[in-house]
Length: 429
Length: 144
Ligand SMILES: Cc1cc2nc3c(=O)[nH]c(=O)nc-3n(C[C@H](O)[C@H](O)[C@H](O)COP(=O)(O)OP(=O)(O)OC[C@H]3O[C@@H](n4cnc5c(N)ncnc54)[C@H](O)[C@@H]3O)c2cc1C
Ligand code: SF4
Ligand code: SF4
Image 1: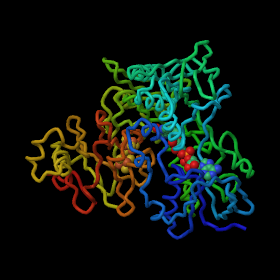
Image 2 (image 1 turned 180 degrees about the vertical axis):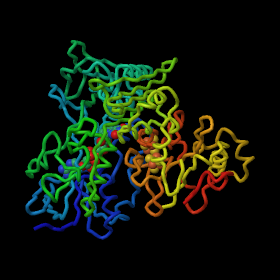
Image 3 (image 1 turned 45 degrees about the vertical axis):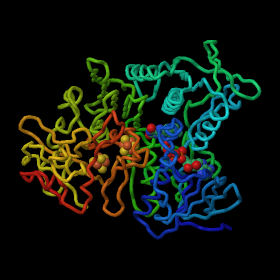
Image 4 (image 1 turned 135 degrees about the vertical axis):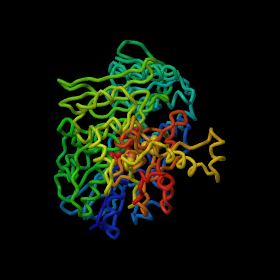
């Protein structure tokens, strides 16, 4: 028998979960609602842990919503207790401490788990992944308690680059090792990556591309070096492995819910069980540009999925058009934004612009008269106008040239589309 | 909820809306005082776009499905549960530009040097007539 039954039970306490709480409470103020998380903290902004490690923001600023958020939203919090089993038939969730909670509707917003490649030495003290509050704390404690002069970050994706930036900011001699031929390979193209690598190097970060870590060496249980496939050995007293995050699917799998690479959901964020929903990094989201589902681990997608899940759990009928992959990454002060496809699909027209001083770069892929991918480096002002055109699948054939050439503005758009965007009662735009 | 709308055909491109937006958010009691301290003036949250005879003034639409709130990784962009207005908290903002990436109107003003969103329409608090609307000489901005 469950100890308590909730109308809405949410496992997870991050982006997707909080969006669901907000959406549920917009529709239903009265239904009982609880949030369960294996982490003890108040909901926090995981992307900010690198900023906090670098000392750029205080720990209190990690909070995603104000301290009285749950109270105001009438949410019971069960924090620091992992869910270990979901029993769909009984409508129950079992927690690690033995408690059993009942639910009417359940949301799995359990995010991703960092992937650790089978490199020997990953179990040494001083080797970390970096996705959670506790990782930040452990890394901080390790730096405080040990002599750390050199760091190696394995992987130059978003997390790897931000961790390297934080280490460099702390005065640690940092090397980033990336298997692909460039930094941020999923977000940027050759030119953009070059610009990003350049600014990283200016900030004292050493970047090694087309280089794989083959083993991590140590002495007395502590990390001392990273060996690369090129044969060279990099001395390091701390190593962060940041080669990617995978959907957290174990709970769903054990419960017999359909799972591919991520938890499978329909456009209402419902899983194969009608009373169980899933949202965020744990799912396989629909990418409308590719017309297929795939794990898309980004914050805006997690929030929007959580919102849709919440509305539907609370009885509304809200369909989700899908998540366009997008990233806004500041690399040592250099702003970069990429939206949609990052490699041109077959038959795509490529429009690009680079400023004479080489500091601003912009590139669009156009397929069937629609923008399907956009990249901005150095100058990102009003980039969302392009995101809107991608999202709306707008035919840009008549004005595409002015999008690439001039400062972005709504003036570049045809009048009828401007009017459609900004329309209100009796409004002429 | 009440929103500000722009009438392109009425806008004469005088940019008084920008001036009064800056003044309203400057914390000064006179226009002269506000504009005498050039370095610490806020950016205007309303932006006049102009090309020859066409001009219009645009600020945040306070979208129903505000993509900027969804995208903000720091909790700085939120919807006011009472008024429905979209608010920006500069103390929380860390300048990741996720909001800039998703705002389809390009309504967010940024300062790359300061590394923060420097201005976004707050409807002047919501209880009063927004300054840009109140001071538009040609009724090209309406609040309804
Ligand atoms: C350092 C870093 C930087 C990032 N930067 C960006 C960025 O700039 N832009 C961007 O778009 N994205 C960024 N991301 C990714 C972004 O944070 C995620 O896409 C987003 O937070 C996903 O939200 P989520 O709610 O799906 O999952 P998560 O944030 O992963 O949250 C999962 C929640 O589930 C809980 N949980 C998991 N398993 C259990 C269990 N068994 N029982 C109970 N609770 C459980 C966890 O404690 C957590 O509360 C970054 C991530 C990191 C780590
Ligand atoms: S800033 Fe842009 S996306 Fe956000 S509410 Fe305003 S218009 Fe909408
Ligand atoms: S720039 Fe500031 S307001 Fe915009 S998404 Fe980032 S933290 Fe939020």
